Length: 396
Length: 160
Image (tube, rainbow over all chains, first blue to last red; front, side, top):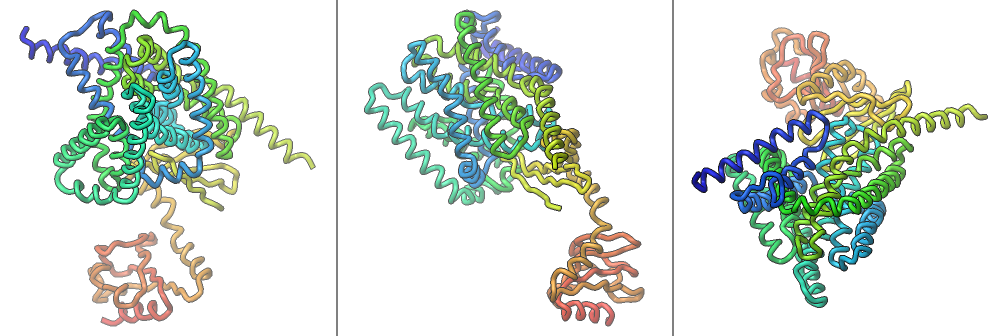
């Protein structure tokens, strides 16, 4: 077989396989993310059916996947919305990050992985998967629930925190000495602040500049711009993901309505490639050794997210049942944890990637089930709360 | 009755209210245009017991079913609430030069300062008629404006 033929056949088999997996996931009510990850593990070195030809191709696709994932996420928010949320929900956001991030950092330090790995594990355990959480809320018909704004508020703050966190991590990984690390963090955060201010004040200029022309022209110019911004951000250690996210925030208004159907399918394709690549880059033989620690960390991660949701729900004036549901909804971790693992790569300890993969596998499978598992308990809490109110009303 | 508005970041808006009978109902408006009608649980008022997704077209149809007959009622209340604001039903009589003309043709708002907020036709109310709305004989226009403005609309529509 010629090289071109081999590339097409292998790539086709991978993408078709993902289609089959996605259909299966939809049928049994799972998120497809862990299945894509497993597919990547099977195709990688030491896996069941190692592929050779398209790995470079898939790596490039994975980079584009990260850019598209974050660009589309940014499109969902306006800069004003982010600022309002930050003002109203900041205490919950800080609690969320500390409560969920510190166990990860402690885990890395206990295993003697060093400070950079501790910062990375902080992010891996702290940030829920916005993609999985909002999909689960939609699928379960919970968009109207009164705890849902609290859940979404936490996700928004995590995304925003991530925009500050990834540059710090990128700079830490890139820099070797202590002094140069501090310098690159300062540069990264400076650029970040600049972009955020420009997006807030002058986003509409961008809208007008690229908002004209056919859908095709719009798609090409936005995609090109996103890749340029992401590449530029990566070059100054702000990280490509953050560049794309900020561009998405800067774009607003009618343009977003037109872009959503254009970018959606593209995002789905390249995001799937990203998850496969995250699996590809890990040797499945490394997994058994890290499975037990990852499971323990995941168990802690479930409890801390439930606690976060409980507090966020109470602040929003929701009853005990809703508080529990909010916590259970926040459990899934996914794309962000894998983006962090991809950023760090082998820069810290070799078992880092495998541990994160196992952690995400566990929580991306269990996460979407958590709200359903919590339901009977939530029901009991609701009944008890209703009885208590009735008693109070009956008492003179 | 109080309608509560809540932002759903990345999704849209939610409006909800508690009815006189104690049930909570809500509407989730997604930025994509889809609407969800939400009925809340009786025991747990924070949880959606049933959610129905409506397309933009279906949502319009439901809104019309619920809203149209209440417009005249709301207008009469408005008249009581706001002093200096007049409301009047002005008929388009058979043989009037305005039969077959559009609302835009009449340039009523520019000429009198009063607005046509609804048209009653065959017992039904057509809310917020657009400029291309075409009048028929027997239509009754609900006009809101200053007493002076409303009187001028009446005079204009009666004289050719």
